[in-house]
Structure formats: C-alpha cells, structure tokens
Image (tube, rainbow, N blue to C red; front, side, top):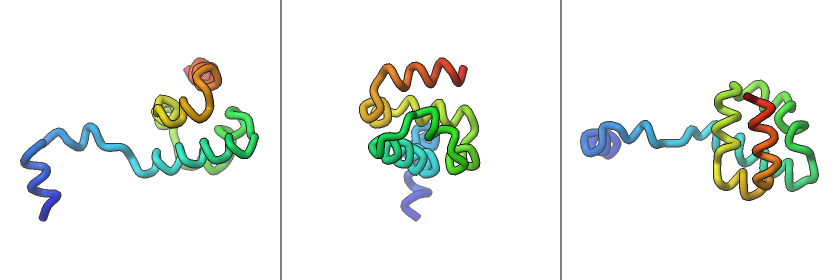
Length: 83
C-alpha cells in the first residue's frame, strides 16, 4: 500500500525512475569493458541486442557511471555512431 500513497504524493514519480533492465545493461557494459572488451563489441553482443532498443542503449550510455567507467570520449564516439 506504500506504493499507492507514494503515487498520490508525487503523481509524476514514474517519469524519474530507472528501468531495472537498463540497470542490468549498464552493469553488463561496465563489467565487460573492465574485462578489456571494446565498447562496440559489447554493444553488438546478443545479450545487449536482444534486450535493448537503440533508444535504451543511448540512455544507458548517458548514465554517469557508464561514462565514468568507459571514458567520455569512448561513449561520445559510440553515441555519434548510434545517431
């Protein structure tokens, strides 16, 4: 019942929640990058392709933790490729 009362307190709270699927994708991208894989190889994995649309991948690449882990230049280059 706590969730319903939260909805009444802030009816637009759903706009600011993150998808747990995007959380898992971000974790996967960071983990695979830490293992030494290139970002374009990671994004071509069936795991990523089967679970995310290009818009979702763009949102994952916009996350501060992903930018910090992969480097701003690598993320920016991949975002340009996706556009």
